[in-house]
Length: 335
Image (tube, rainbow, N blue to C red; front, side):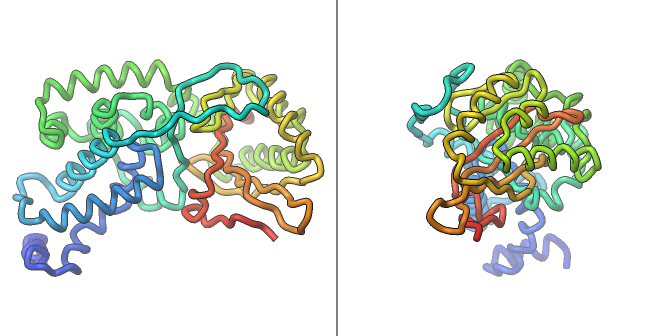
C-alpha cells in the first residue's frame, strides 16, 4: 500500500494506519525533544504531545514537505512552547559538600540511555549536518545546548545535528531563512566557546567495549567500591571536571575532585558501595548504590556518566534523580 493510501486511511480515523506512518520516526523524535529540553522525562511527554497533535491535525498535512519534516515541525514548536512555560526554582548546593571550584547557573539535564539510541545511531545525518551522531548525543554537546537561547538551540539541532536545510528550518519555525542563518551563527559561536568536549576529544576516547575501555572502567569501579579517592584521582586527566546537574557547583581538576570524593567516601565508610555498569549518551556509566547499615540491601545513590579521553577520565557527571531508573532498567534497591 502506498503512503498516500495509508495517509487516506489514517485521515479517515484508522489508528493502525496512523501508527504505521509515524512509528519509523518515534525514537528520533524523542531524541530530538531530549536534545532541546535536556530532560528524558520531558522528552517522553513532548513526544506524546507531538503524536497527539499530529493525529488530531492530520488533515492539515498537505504533503508539500515529508511526513518526517512535518513531525519535526510539530515536535520543535511543542518543545519551544514547553521551554517558554518552564519555571524551575534554582537549587542550592548542599552545605555539607566541600567548597566547589566555581559556581554556575543551574543546568536542568538528565542522561539518555544508550538502549534508546538503537536504530538512531546508524541513521546518517543530512548532508548539511556538522556533527556526527556520536558527537550530537554526547553529554557535553547536550550540556552546551542547554546554555543556548531556546530558538538558537532548536535551529542548531535542526541544522547541525540533523542536517535540515535552512529553508526547511525556516518553514518549521515560521520565520525567514535570514533569521535562521543569523540564529545559527550565534548558536555556533556560543556552543564552541562553552562546550569543553571537541570532536578531537571524542575521537581520542577508546572504542566502546575495547580492552582500553574495559581496563579503565574496571579500575574505576574497583577504586570506587573500595572508597579509594587516591586511585580514582590517578585515573583522571589534570583538567577533569565533576558536575552534578542541576546543582550549581563544579569541581575542576583532579585535586578538587579528589577532595570531593574523599569527603563523600569518609561519610559512608561503613556503607559499602556497589556499581552497576550501563551506558548513557554514547558514554560509559555506572549506577552507584550505597549499602544500608540495618539491612542487607544497597539503595540507589546516583548515576555517574564518564567521559573518557585516551586511558584517562576527563569528566564525571552525577545524576541523583531516581526518576531516570526505569528508562535504564535499573532498580532502586539491590539485594
